[in-house]
Length: 108
Image 1: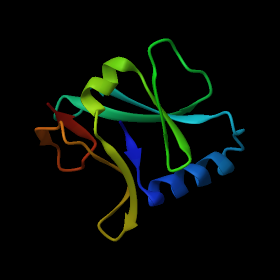
Image 2: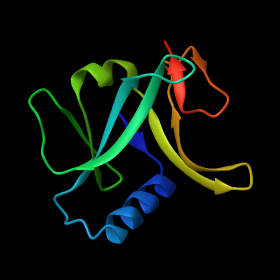
Image 3: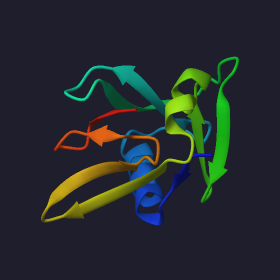
Image 4: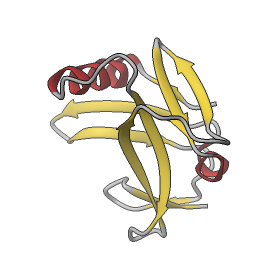
């Protein structure tokens, strides 16, 4: 399962409103190769589910992840912070054995 915190939910809803996206859009979470630790997180809005997608309804938000990415993201919590130490989405990934300093890439 992939979960999100209330602060991440609030930011997702704000971004959807700013982009004037309809209610059928959801957050797609995926993993791509790259970054200083080998794998990077990717977030995007989408409105089309694909075969094999894993779908999670958490805190009233629909989160979708392809099966290959889900193998790396199972148990991950998506958070959002906007404090003095940084602003942005944070992935709390129990599968990551190493992360880079900026938190945008990881290794398993």
